[in-house]
Amino acid sequence: MSDAGVSPPPAEPAVDLDLRLVRSFTVVAEHLNFARAAAALHLAQPSLSRAGDRNPLVAHFVESAKNLLLRDA
Image 1 (cartoon, helix red, strand yellow):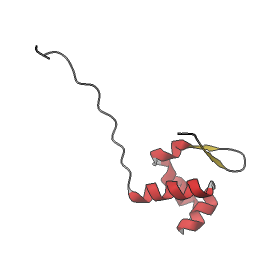
Image 2 (tube, helix red, strand yellow):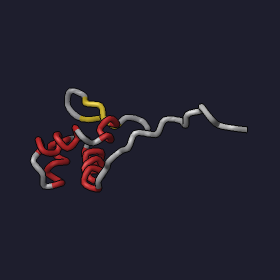
Image 3 (cartoon, helix red, strand yellow):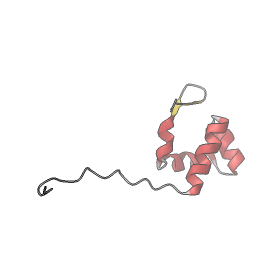
């Protein structure tokens, strides 16, 4: 039987995570607050927020009026 003309399934998009992004996600998840997580990581809060913009794990957080919530997996 020939597979001619049958295209393979689409590839999963590549996720480029480095250890800093995983570590920052973990600390934000522990503190559920960007300012406290930034202090624990010895970073400025804006730099942690910018790092979150390129971190696909950030989609697991929901911002409320006062803090962050972690979505159910």
